[in-house]
Length: 276
Image (cartoon, rainbow, N blue to C red; front, side, top):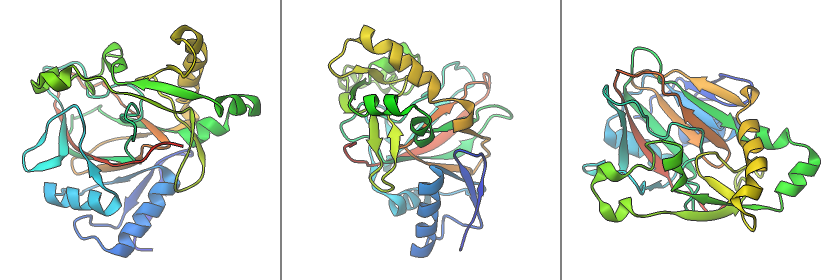
């Protein structure tokens, strides 16, 4: 093994050390990818990558894709800046969610690189959706396996996140755009073959063929169930830290507890497929 992998919780997440991500090899990428598939989210510290090196690492893992709502960094259309300023009180994507499930082909993965972090706070949590599914009763698993869910980008306005607030872009055509998708409530991971619960409070509107009122009690139960502490991990950011997570089987929640301080990240999204 070229790398050292240290789990950070019983359910999800591992720190990888002994690696310089600016110097990649095929063997190194294979080991990182294997650890990522096993632990769902992997973390690296002390990786002050240039934008070009960050993009090269992303391209070694998958295919970078454009995020539909926020402008990209000049000369690097695959990279967006995730920023909360000292004067702001709302943070980017500040609720439990899987990234952009309202797209017909949600991303396979997302990556964050920390450029500026507050002196305290600003951690991110992740939750294991394999574990959330496996903890359900057999009867509920069977029922959910027969359902699809409707997801909408418009729900993020209700949950007060910045992820889908695109007025600041100044692009009125994007500002008026709403994405909606229909995906299985339980999806099968295309690489591991494992089943994962695939709904989230930020974007899941209802079950297909049911009203929102009919869907709400079961969805609210699932939203509470899937973020039980035993399914989660929590990561403390430092400048140069990187997180790579599997959007097909993990949710995340950036904690908004650092008002008055700046936090700046660069993010790359990796193209996915149609959930099955």
